[in-house]
Image 1 (cartoon, rainbow, N blue to C red):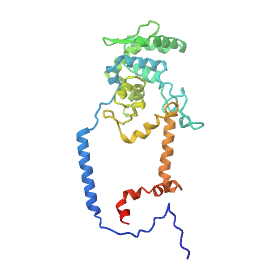
Image 2 (image 1 turned 30 degrees about the vertical axis):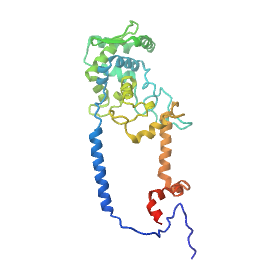
Image 3 (image 1 turned 45 degrees about the horizontal axis):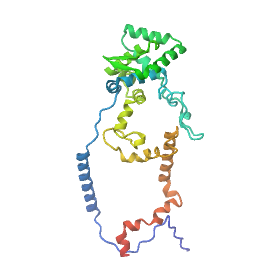
Image 4 (image 1 turned 60 degrees about the vertical axis):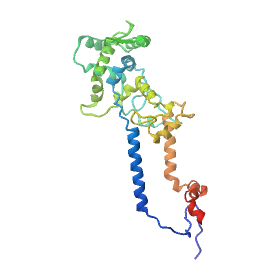
Amino acid sequence: MTKKAFRPDVDAPEYKGAYVPYDIIKEGAIAVLVVFILTAALALVFSSPDEKAVTIKTWSNADAVDFAQTAGDELAGTSAVANYGAPYNNNGTSQHWGFLSPEKWVGVRIKIDTTKDFVIDPLSAQPAQPALTAALNEWNSASSATQTTWDNAFNKAEPNLTFSNGQVRIPTKAAGPIPVLLNYETQMARSGALDQALVTQSGFYTTNYTKPLLFISDGTYFAGLADKQHLTGSQWGMMNETGQYPGQAWLWLYTFWYQVHPYSTSASGDFLVWGTMMILTALMILLPFIPGLRSIPRRLKIYRIIWREHYAAE
C-alpha cells in the first residue's frame, strides 16, 4: 500500500516529543478568577454609560431655534431625510457600486413624506385651535407653486430665526402660514406631544421610533452631542450608547474605512464599507477552505513563539 503524501496545509505532523502533566481544571479556575477580578475592577473604575435618550422634547427644549429651522426644512421637503431616497422615498440617488444597488432593488419600504408625516399630520391631530386650523387650511388649500414660494421666503429668513418667550420669530411676512405652523410645532415638540404623535402614527401600541429618530438626525443638535462625545465619523467614533469615550473597541474596523479614500469621499460610502466588511467576513468564514490563505499560520510559524519552551527542549 502506497503511503499517502503529507499535506502541510491540511495534515498535522505526528508529535514525537515529550509529555508533561497539565491540570486544565486548575488553569481554567485561575483564568475565570482573573477575568472576574478584572471585570469587577474595570466596572468600578469606568462604570457603565448612562446617558438619557435624546428625544424631540429634549432637543426642542435645549435648542428651539435648531428644531424650528429643521421643522421648516421638513415642511419644505429640503431636509436630508426628504431627499435620502430608498427605503424612505424616491427623491434621492441610492448608494451603489457599479450596477450593485441593494437600496434600489429593495425599493421604498418605509415610506416617509417629511412634509406630511413630520409637520402637517401631527399638527392636524392637535385639538382645534383657531389660529392653527386657519394656518393648516391655508397651507392645504394652496397650490404647490404657492407653497414653494412660502418655503423659499422661509429659507431666506431661516438664518435669522429666533426664539423668545415661548415663540418662534421668523423675520419675514412672505412665508404665508409657515410661522404659525412652526410655532405650534415647536410648542408641541417642547411638551413631548410630537414624540408621541410620530410614534403612534402607525398604531397606538408601537415601538417603531423610525420617524422621530430621522427627524432628530436632520438637526444639528444631535450631531453636536456626537461631536462632544468624539463619535462623529471623522473622529473614528461609533457606539450604541453615548457617555463613554472612545466607544466600543470592536467597532473600530467599521469606522476605520470611513477615514480612507474612496470611502471617505464617496456618496456611497456606507454601501462600500458594508460591502468591504461582507467580503472580509466571507474570507474569515471560508479561511479553512482557501488554499494558500489557510497555510499562512503554518508558514509564519508563530506557533513556535507561543510554544517556544517546547520547541527549545525539542
